[in-house]
Length: 460
Length: 99
Image (tube, rainbow over all chains, first blue to last red; front, side, top):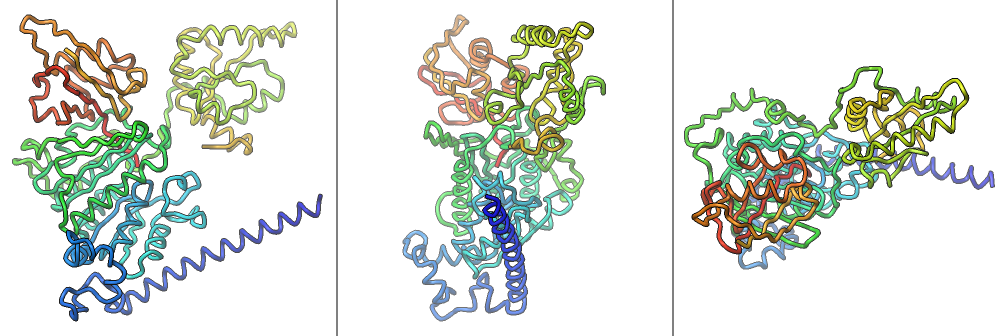
């Protein structure tokens, strides 16, 4: 048994070493390719089709073969492909939407394809961010996405912008491209990118996905509306759900991302009718796609309207996080609603439990979270139904007191846990208000418990 | 007046997670006409089960909600004054930001 165990450990360690070596090699290859590209721009660049004049359309024999199925489309043909090869497209975000968008845009022969992202690849991205492979976990998404794009099409120019898009760099980055694809995941970024596209006069292909639903439209194109024409006032932060909280079926952003690639290709090749002035609404569960007519450019729009003079400087000075009351990075919220003595650290609680303290642990996460993982003996009462289920807490406390009755101490303490430590604070606020004065929230929730007390508790 | 109301983008969570509602709305004025303004009040009273502030702000929908009457943005048909007719389909959809 023991020798089997040590054999497995040896194999695992060798796999780890090999993976590290492979990722070093991948990085080295990417760097060398980029270097080569700068040394021989004529040989490697296809964004300049004038190098081949032999057939009168600028496509080399290799390009003709590679893109032959495009050339065979009468409505697309040499002209459409040649337009694509001359175009440049920037994808903001290499996540669930950006992954398929980038793969198709690289494959189809966009001359210059840029990608902006500041994040690293994580295991819980893999189910939907299909451009990344396991070998890149922990590495920048931009590196990973660029490597995938290069492995699909080594003949186009891939530009890596490994940074967070913000007002100080957006003008400079976006101005290098003809078409912008918004594949971000938060409200302030969406306002910022739209405003920047208006200032620079660039069409914006905007997609969004959450849960089982997706939305898609093209802004600031052919006298169509911009994002602000449609949404002049930002929604309340409570209406801005994140995939990390509400979940998302992996294929849903995949579909929307593919549609974003399609719209970008249509604009770049000047073929077809872009989805401007219309919006596509996708509901995966009921298998329904609805395409609706939306308002045109608003004359009163503060950014693109008739009397608006939204300048580059105003854009640079605009505080999008303040405007939308939410952070540009889709970070988790960290509330601090309670006085110190209404709260407890997970380590301290662990010690108290080990000493046999009489207590009741209430888990206020929704039932489907509780089913993923829960602490032993936790009582699940979701925050939304807490008020109507207070009696269950009272009787649990009484029972615990009876069980632990040693004659001198007869009160059981009440602890509240949730996923990250925000809802538990809301719950404790409510519990104190209705008289459960011993209620304390576990700081940082299940995530802190997993980090500080029991690493065997899975996080999600 | 028979109408089909649809909620999406998370707004369905405010009405028991039901997305499509076939409803009969009776105008409570003499002229027997129904506008979007009337319908919003009716929806808030009869369909919205929780957090009404996530649906309405003042007498209109809250920011970030698109209203579509027969697949057309209500901005194009008069917003709150949009007249409704028998068998109209009204969609309320919250804009998504995820990706």
